[in-house]
Image 1 (spheres, rainbow over the protein chains, first blue to last red):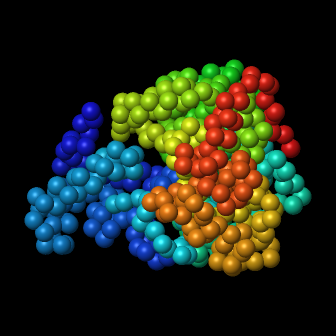
Image 2: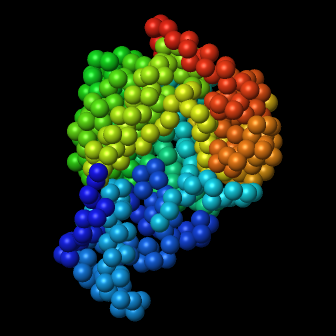
Length: 97
Length: 368
């Protein structure tokens, strides 16, 4: 069993896309896509808003606050959704925490 | 997020935008791997596209919706203009992936490639034991050079994939191979069982593992994935002679990707020239969009309407598109047949018979 999927993300973690992973907007492919080694992931609007904020500057707490404010959403719900997404990306080596 | 690789999401889509372009910059290569995916008849250096033409092809590809370009060969570093070609691909807005043997790229040229915006490096490595690796590559000292280049890639913080082609000579070392990839600092490793086209088809008897070996290898990959979850991504290319269903080759003919040969012919897949009677158009005469939409070869097997039974009434026809056209032709002589790898194919016994033809003969090395 792996435990990583349920490991929480530290409030002061500064998530960032590693070199070789890029979020781009592409009309012909229907919106936001995350480009990675030999892989292409379609990102829905919510995922794109989360990943856009993973610059390596902002802490996870700051990202959650920003998202909750911008989209007027309950912070704890935002935290859970963002954590699940970022943990999944990190497990696929698409994000550094 | 979901991967766009899911074939079911586009069930009846007629004409989609391609996602990937395989740019075979040259067929020249210092190595002689007996499973090389290049055709038996190699393009000559004098016929290779120039830098400006590749730059145009990349712009046209981006305009067509292509997101990623795979700079491949042969050995792409055999081109002196590789840095300019890479920069042109980035300028066109493409994600650039270098697929290299690791022999011919120097620390200096790698630095220039990184500065040009290279996104990812894939290095092929033949085995975890130097002597065996060099024997498979047909090149003394290849293993050491590949490991050295991998270290340079990691030092530049470029993402690294180790590509390991699996066959009878290394299939018992799956654990050691994954450990090697971890030691190299790779974030991703491809455990790619040989696909039997071109040079590999010629060397099939020397390369073919047994069913028991394949089953053990598949089991080890599963276990190692679990063990190294979050540390390294293990992707596997299935050993299809022992599969029950065929692979959706290149994600469906004329559906997701294009392949441009060194001299500019555009193919639906890298082995498509093994199918007789197909008319391939060249980027020298047509735009990439024109080729994608209208060339006879791209339209030859698009969709599933051409498929006979058992595919026609099969629930999987929009998942695997009847499998691989090149393999159907190579084994049954009929380009439209169900890929005989499928256990439902009336020709499946041919695959079983050919898998049983194993012989310890010397490799016929790819040379050219």
